Image (cartoon, rainbow, N blue to C red; front, side, top):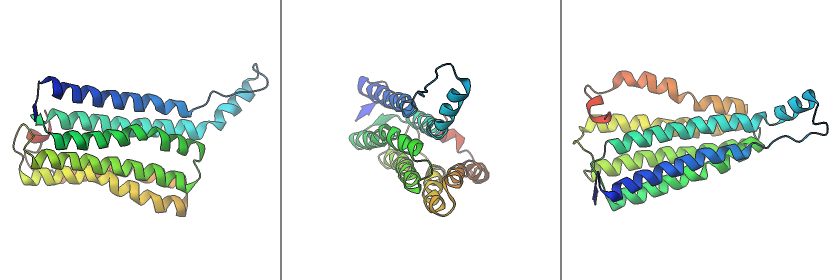
Length: 211
């Protein structure tokens, strides 16, 4: 077990941040620089850039998704007083799926209208959200948090972290039935859901969840 402030604790944070940074940077490699016959033709260049619109869209969607997970990971580690081997292993698996996300992003960019690409991307992100909940459970069960957390606050926070899993999994049949655009719209339903669910936030939860 390693206490906050130790070299080992700091290395875990630094490594985690590096994985996020590399994953977010690699997203742009899915966008190819256009090639055209007439390098001076603005219309040809505009058409070629338009052909990359799906890849550009998938880049910004994935950048926002990974960015959201980085913010959540940062907030989670700010609550920890220490880490143990079980949390270390769970965090490593979690980071593995973060590092994997540039692949389904590129797949989505190349096959935007293919429901299977939506299914692979949504499945990968749902796993990341599930692992986020698992990390919090390990920290709660192993008494790794700075403050002992009331059970109602723990359950509410777990529900909020688990909600993206529902919407990403739900988007898979939507992609097959209605198309990719509607599936992606389904992902963003998690935002109003969480705003609505915040009405049932236990009193004093911020004292335990914000540092």
